[in-house]
Length: 353
Ligand SMILES: [Zn+2]
Ligand SMILES: [Zn+2]
Image 1 (cartoon, rainbow, N blue to C red):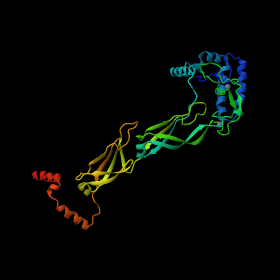
Image 2 (cartoon, helix red, strand yellow):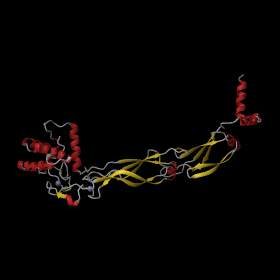
Image 3 (cartoon, rainbow, N blue to C red):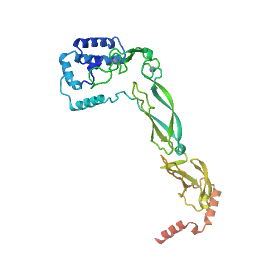
Image 4 (tube, rainbow, N blue to C red):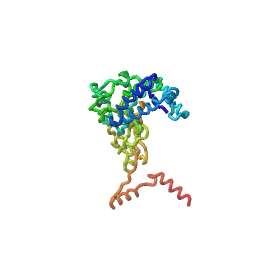
């Protein structure tokens, strides 16, 4: 398949004579021949030029190419349906001038935030390795004093040949000029690598895995296209005290038996600092105390979640003999009614005998 416009590659019009085709080929082949020009670019260009010349220098092939355009095949076989589809798509794109300029790459960057950050939201400074347009040559790859007019298109940047193919000159990519020396700052690439300092807005209520898009903060393209985007991926770090459950936050609060039995005030942490909560006397283990509206904000606004304190009984460890004696002596003083559920259970067991 002829993916390219051979006339444009040789820089000649469709009406060019065999002689003009030959002249154009000789000039370009000399310029791009790998013997004279050792760059990677030259190898590719030379191949394209040779292919274009093979077709346009042969009257029979050229006639077939003129008739079939992009559907031309070297061996004369009919194009396959998928090839026809592809060619039609490309031609339509060219007709409507869909930008074929390559866009820079999108980038990803992960940030770790704490639950406290999720509660308040805020800005974060990040240092992202990325490629930006070279400032010395404004991305063109050569400084203004190192540019020569493109002699193939005479500086117009316009394509020769059919409009169904490319819309810009093959040799200067439509710029109208070619570099005579690469820009020293970017070595001709038009972009330079750096660690860019950016600010990202972390919205309150954000969750792990969420993507924050920074438009045009990805890599700059090699040519004239647009910058890629930067996607900042959020990771909410595990917290030593807080557990997230949607917009609610749960704290496992270790309490002693006497705190549960007698009740009292405890100083507890919150996302914003600390506060005191009342444990009612006679609270069973596992009871949940709730501070309404002290959880996380909903992403995009709305009511805040709640802060839950789940009372977890901690049984004392490491009792010495005198503590054990004291404890069992005290337990023996309790009436049966002090543990009503145990009493019910014991009665049920007794009844089965
Ligand atoms: Zn040109
Ligand atoms: Zn540069």
